[in-house]
Amino acid sequence: MEIEGRGRILVWEGASLWLLEAAGGVGRADFHSHHAIQITLALEGDFELRTADERLRGPAVAVAADASHVFEASGLVAFLFVEPESREGRALAASFRGKALRALSGESVAQHRAALAAAFRSGSRDEEFARLGAVIVAAMAGSAEARVADPRIRSMIDHAGGNLQNGVSLPSAASAACLSESRARHLFVEQTGLPFKTYVLWLRIGRAVELYAAGASLTEAAHEAGFADSAHFSRTFRRTFGLPAAALRVNSRFVQAVQPDAA
Image (tube, rainbow, N blue to C red; front, side):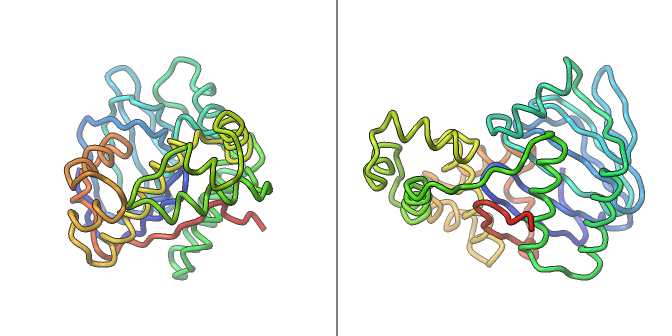
């Protein structure tokens, strides 16, 4: 699938928000799959999602992790990709009850769609999109948003963010926070909702997207984000989002929001 037309892409640890307005008003993706759970919201227009056995139309549908599906849309569509290993991802995964597709309905869903559409049309700041995305993920998962309060976990986060290019490990991050490896592993999941290794992977993806959107080559972006090469980044990106990394456009936007503010 190729991204065409206007759009914004924001990545934070454990999730990503894509707002896409298809060129000519119509977009299509043939059968593909990705590891991230997908929440799809029609902001203007409509869409249809299909698997080999299921078919659902918008305005709001979730797709289970690793489910092969076809997508067709018209107008402006929002995609929220959620890491299945995260706290919210585990809650969302349980809600599918063996199905690949799940219709989302209710007044809160309509309000979220309206808020995203208004933000897109008014040209809101990236931080506002990250906040809205985090609120929607939490609402769909039926959970409160995670907050990083423990200063030791903040030290681990700062260590990870400052060492992506040179390599980040749980032992090194635990040492920076004056924690044992076993305690750091448990406390990190408790505070952030993500295993440390998964958290770092999302940091790397976000950093590479930021650099590529700013004009770096795919190879430069991959190396500076700590991937072995552009092929490694491309494989990781496709596995996560079902798209080749080369589909990103330089007018995509990025914001690093470790814990987007719900206020």
